[in-house]
Image (cartoon, rainbow, N blue to C red; front, side):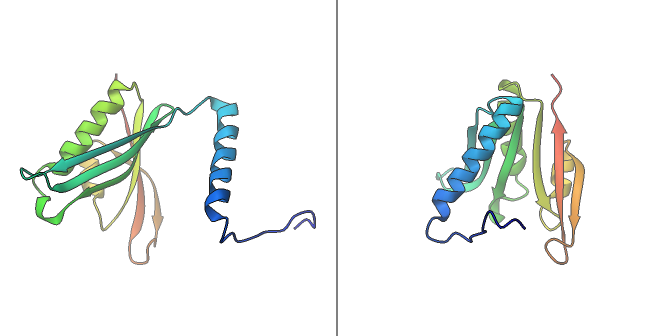
Length: 143
């Protein structure tokens, strides 16, 4: 390690430093492949009384949709809610002229569900968390 710097675990300035790190990386990436033009995507599924029974949170940027979170309440599972959310997200990605959708899940969550929607595994971290694996998936969108 060079004596020209020191490493600090930020506590009081953590949010400010995190924003600066994110901004620095975004600026670097922009200089290499262009502006990402981040656009959030948040979809909800509601029952007939308007109660939230599922949702999807993602980011559209560059030529992809990243699905960060997909959740369906226990009582609504098996009713097509997750499939509906994913299909709606895919429709929005297509309208935004994206080339792919990517996400990750765990072996105790829904890898088979995503494969049934046309996603394919591109990577895995075995033993994370202990007793399970984290799986990375992608779906290329045909035009």
